[in-house]
Amino acid sequence: MAAAEPYRRRVTDAFYVPVRPGVLRSTEHTVGPWTDTDQHGGPPSGLLVRALEGVLPPDGGHLARVSVDLLTSVPVTELTVSAVLVRPGRSVQLAIATLTVGGREVARAGGWWHRSGDTAAVASPTAAAPPLPPTPITLDERWPGGYLRAMEWRQVHGDFIEPGPAVVWSRMGMPLVAGEEPSPAQRVLVTADSGNGAGSTLSLDRWLFVNTELTVHLVRPPAGEWVCLDAESTIGATGAGIARAAISDLDGPVGHAAQALLVRRR
Image (cartoon, rainbow, N blue to C red; front, side, top):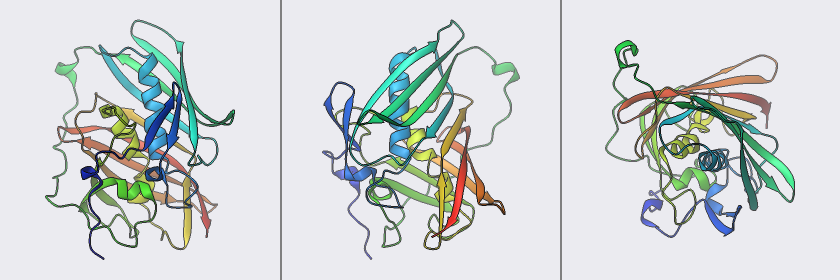
């Protein structure tokens, strides 16, 4: 099948459209791979980071850890988004963000903010980022859901759809929220939830491997549009698994993501 028109060219598209303060309408671009009524975990994770950034300091530091709990499937509908600062401080702060549907909480995230300091003299050595391939992956019938087609993907190693570890770059083909430029941290969380898909050891046709949470640690503020996942999964014998991904931007490694997986036969 020929590649679909890149969503990047469709500037009126977005994952969410504001309805009124604190309420956003989910678009078809949030749809995940399991059912067309539920969202992929990436866009809601980005939306939670957006809320965290709204109550944490805008400069002088960065989100060092974001832990997202997906309390249930996030439906493709209107979402109410809120955040509160629960631990103020000069050097560290903690905020909690929530997504609700009809008064029911469907997802939450905790974000630790750390103030910046000068540790260049003792910083760990870092490798270069994986190379960014010049051409996108061709989208075909193996790519289910609106989210996967709303992102631009470039493969370095492995196959995003076929089982096995993979190294893949991506960038959002549209804004997270219509009329807004997403922050680099929002971009990271929108992509990081794809680690269990990119590095899966199981066939998407035969198995469900749904993450109930996503935890991202960042060693520095991310930068730019592009996010790279070096992803792999480990599946246990009792219906559980772990997906892990090293995260890079074009400047090099930036952090790690992990997801707890519920694994079941389809």
